[in-house]
Length: 279
Length: 305
Image (cartoon, rainbow over all chains, first blue to last red; front, side, top):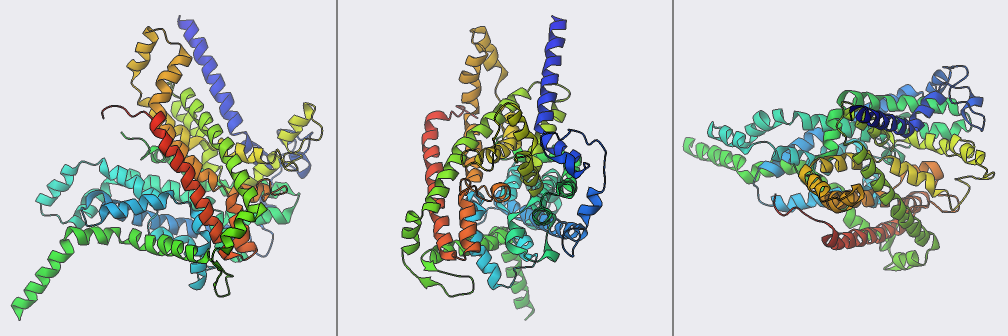
């Protein structure tokens, strides 16, 4: 009996590991490709491991294609992602508190609007939003990519509402009796308890903004404004068949996302399931 | 004088601590954002859909002309068809995959957390430009996947040169990002009471019977949730198609969001593109509506809780 179970468990682990490796094969292929010579990346006889590990792809790629290096693009991505994430956290904590804990006139109506906005695909509003930003002379600035996040991102508002609903109402009531106003209940009771939900929001929103392609494609037309994700697309177009540097920059562009995942994957996974399943 | 001051400040205090005021103060960012970034753009989009409009010009009212032209536009009809094909194949594939992996990873072992994390990696990075660029080479005519297929005997095989096969790498790239659906399924699986399975086992139900009679019905609300979420994002797929195939070859992967983008920004047919957005929104609403209506027949909610 016991040996049978050990055999079955071993087979299970081998299968899960093997399949898992297959799943991340494209990532491994990319990372290995960034250390290969040009001739070994593609083609029928391309080896799995580089025969000689070369590192030139990294400095070659870092220089970029035009007059701006990837230092500029990383800086732009960092500015946009940090500010957009900050905006998301501020607006989501505020709005979720209002919708989950304050009984104000029209709450149901605004909640419905929020859910509808969440389900509405952004591409449908792509053109009118562009026209508005263009009228405001905000095209070719970071504003269209940052400001909207300060005005509430429905997905995160909804996620935090679910989290706040899980906090015992007795806390609010006790604070009320002690003379706390609705404002101090937010700052002294709810906000400190929102920690895990805030971390989830930071992780998910940071990597969404970092990876965003459509936003920069629409609003950042000048090379000095490019984000990393938009820059590597253009870089790849210019490089043609010289794939090494492109693989190197692709690998670099994923590192911040990986680091966040490494440190906070617990929070990220909780966030993904929050709201979809009760309990 | 002093008394009046008091009453004013009292009134002000009363106003500021009123539930309605508090609610609107805290909800203000969303209300502002909703009006400026959703409501007004939607209104504008509706108006422009009845106009000829270029970004530098003045909107010129043309009535229903945009909609009539769209219905006769072969490119538009094609983009709707290929999008439906992409959704009809890609979404079920992704959900089946997500469910199977979620079930595989329910086995309680010390490594469960690590396994879930590794299987989540594709979802973490799959939407990025970096992966799209790598995917393009991975499935390209000189990439390892095609080399493998060629080694098996199909000499002239090529994904991106063929109108029949070009969508396959895109569907696979989407299915590969099964992570969030997997996690949602996994948390649903955890909530199915163990005694259901034990009772069924005593009654002699085998693994397959248990799956179809216990697992699937218990998960049906979650399946519905995942299905709707994936449908909406599938309909609007953009980044991968834009980078990997550019909608080609011969419009075979020219999905609706690419159509809107090209018409609106490359050709400057902003009114036409807005009209297209509305037609697509209606189609999406119809599809999700139908699924929602039929869900009453196949979604089972627990009697209490």
